[in-house]
Length: 341
Image (cartoon, rainbow, N blue to C red; front, side, top):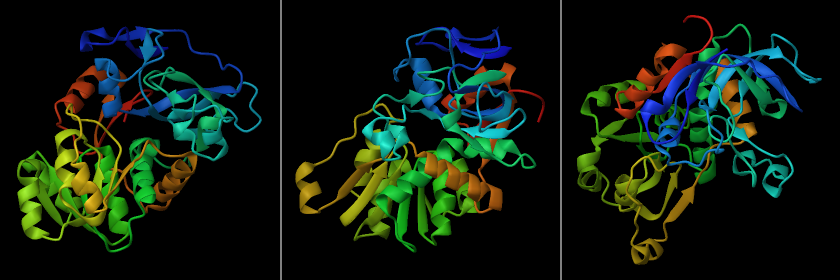
């Protein structure tokens, strides 16, 4: 089979297309013929050596993928030809987190494409407990574009408990998580403010549902002027300096949920101001299997429509990653692994 391989961390020069043997399913596994694989900022962090990997190279990247069962192994639940989405986080099923259905924070977990070979290959061996069926008659690309980013966005909103009709600031609004968060917030009839460093993307954000857009360079002053009492909810998919500045914009008893450290700088906070204003800061890591099932239902019924920026063939994955690195993306980039699109 053809696979997109990372030979070592630290450089895009370590990325290659290589021919490998088709993986046979191990214990409790099936082999999936990959249809689509989504790209994420996580892939860039892995390449740069900023996220721990299994230590085994070559490593097949790709945490977010859909496909069809090619070899069900000894599975009693899945058969050849079943169309499936792969839950990105590996989990043991036995630790306290897993027993509480919090699979993404499993004590012994990881992710496909980081601690286990992922979906940027024509075939992938996947634990059957990570599989969720998707309708065969619908475009699996839409489901793929929702597997990691949309469930991350949904999980963030659920954790922070955003009320219907609230005013919400979304940082990192033009990526997969951000564009999903906007749609999910509009379902809750929220007033959505979106920050971006790219003025050319502001029109796209407004078409997607943003009520107000603001450039990150002027975010604090602009929003303090418009919202002198502050903003009650902030959804942050950026981190760094933007995270630090956003804390200043919260109302008393305001809430910020965050999922990423995209920017290099450390997030900083004035602890005195934080406790006297009684603000609430909440980390959110990925999403649970229940979130994936719910998002698949949203896509199936048309309640959620993921934004797909572009689709590349497997041979052009490096080019697609460079586009992501250079922030020229609005929504999701997908890789069409098998077949054409």
